[in-house]
Length: 413
Ligand code: AMP
Ligand code: MG
Image (cartoon, rainbow, N blue to C red; front, side, top):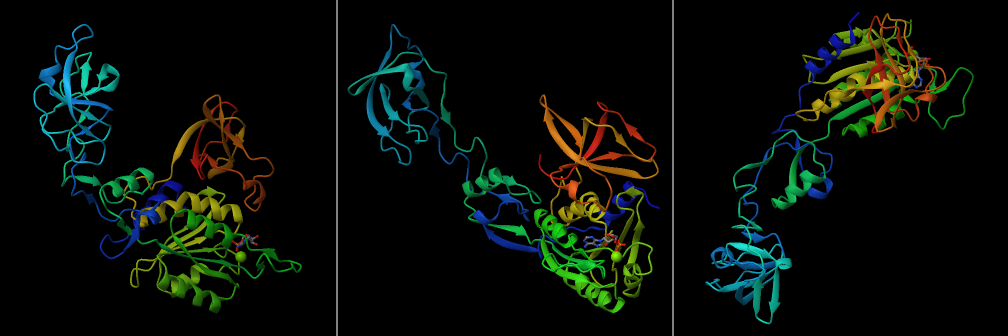
């Protein structure tokens, strides 16, 4: 059986990111949040665009005011008032100043701004009561960025700051990667939809709902194929359709060793190359991962049917795979943190063990609190309100309260 680390390496190597030429779409800036930038952005503009003032005050010639002090102020004639958004009309000569406001263009002839608080005004004269530094409070054209230099690299996620940069660079629309398409279906004769009254032996399909939510949260577009019976013909039809129409296929159930677990056999008849059949982890041991080298680049994940197992394997393997496929250049790998455990954590040591709970802020540091109730892969209920999985490696059977443990972040804290 494969270790979790080896399985992760195999999976992440199978994933080829979307193509920066073919797999793109153009979106308006206000619809671009959380999308992945497909191409680098180079600005045609200098930042700042013009020499401008960082203060409300007076634009002056430094040589006129370098000796100024409270006893012997420099007295200058105010020849113009320049507010933000306007082009100055005069050139400042020796003995002159312009009243200027934050963001306004520095007039020709001036090289320094004296902040208003260090001046006194009498009609059209200003008294400079303290010498400034040369060029003080001038934001020089192109001092942040020059036209032609790269503002944003490809493969980053667009958040508020990046979207502001795009706006400032006059890109009202932006090329982003299309969303990956992820087909999702549940398998099992016992499954019904949430609106169906239960007959004896049936259970409600929760995996389709959880997986669709996670796929959307990962920035991908779910293609919902519903519940498929444990029937080889129906399953084969659905799997063939899914791999032809999606970048990633997620099924849950039917990958164990029971008589009705057909998924692996059908994948073989569809010429799949099966890379993984089981992983040394709990919950989540049955996990099938395949691709179709003769057909297209789709990757198939046969997740275990147990609701917690399906989600744990999603968080550990599928979420990073979707994010890498989506074009994110860095930071798609799962995020592990080392934190103190509030509770005792136990495992049998035979497989890598994932224990669900919450990271809580305690005295300014995060602490792992194990979810109450039974930690059984079929018990979905206490997974609600969790945001982290504590990970006990193979061979480790105990973490005592107060000891450090590695946790995998599964939701924002
Ligand atoms: P399987 O992997 O098909 O053997 O299923 C393992 C367990 O998970 C069984 O108890 C199933 O009833 C349950 N299960 C399978 N699929 C789902 C699903 N979509 N939603 C909730 N439970 C499921
Ligand atoms: Mg089943």
